[in-house]
Length: 243
Image (cartoon, rainbow, N blue to C red):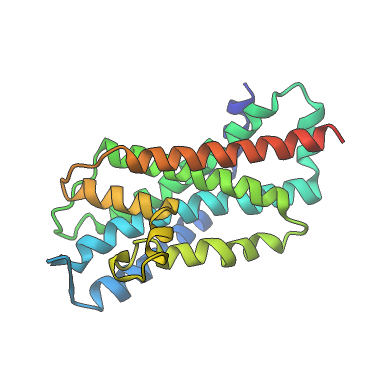
């Protein structure tokens, strides 16, 4: 019931701010498509650049949508509304509260990615997005929603959430196999960037959309990130509960 209650809160928030959320999910990725995809006529790996760019922007949208849906809201609720303290003294199990936040954030990210798919639907690219693509989008959303949950516990003020976005999300947005391939990066940096969750997601969605075989390595990497950040978030909450 705790998970359902959190998801219901997220749903009411989504309905209340539907137009704001939708515009925020559309404007920046649409600018990327217009400037990089349509404004720069080039190829990548022998294919039209749009075929490379669209899967990257879908992965990018699931990341930013999931992260922003959790980071700012949780920071405000924890620091000012003291909602986390209320959850701790309520009969709701803390793991259900965490899971509800993560699932809600991931669904918001999938909504952002789905909007990009709708926007690019009229473009004849030959890309294919199927159930496996949706699963990877959801898994990527859970990773960044859990990451946002951890950073919201580290935040000392409401202004820290944008800082975490600038320090972590923005660099990954441009470096992690979204707008250009990481193949030309210097050795060492290339391997490090390739291990980041957005790089794995972009590669998997791009491979699926091109009809290529996608192994389980990327999914395993995302699951490791999910497990690690979930454990850290649980430790934060239970540490605060025992103070």
